[in-house]
Amino acid sequence: MKQATLCLLIKQNQNNKKLLLAMKKRGFGIGKWNGVGGKFDPRKDKSINKAAIREVKEEIGVKVKKMEKVAFLSFYFSQQPSFNQDVHVFLVNDWEGKPKESEEMAPKWFKKNEIPFNEMWSDDKFWLPKVLDGEKLVGDFFFKEGEIIEKYNIKIVKEFR
Image (cartoon, rainbow, N blue to C red; front, side, top):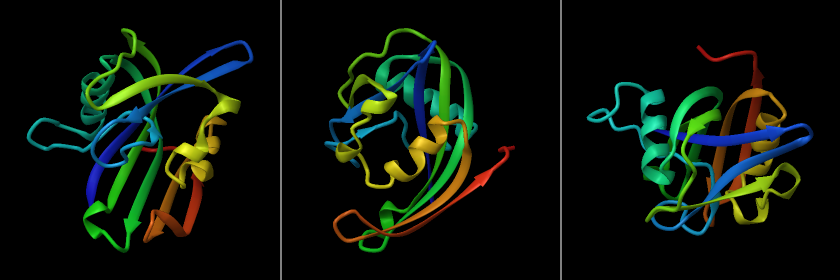
């Protein structure tokens, strides 16, 4: 399985939580809102955490200062096994710089109650609200043709090591 990262930048003041999503402009997931991240590259990255930090810098020009692993998600595509991947999901609450558009991603802030699930991967509506509510989880998602979820399971965990 390919290893990949997904970082979700969060900013919060009083009762207002905002999530940074980015419109994917090319490659896998084009035309969808998503968190920021990408593939683990053992030639560049010493760890999955380092890969996450590198991807955020490359895709939106932000330097991650503090992040927390909140999910480990496995995705299986029966029609395209080469797309199968394990995704390590991180919440980022502390960073330097202002998110900016790159050749690959166009970032935008969304209020928690205005997340555009109908323009995202279909699995996001099952796990993302849980993560934003402070839960940590492990999940498996099985897609059939047309990027339609055939089945899935989610397990809440206490922590990641």
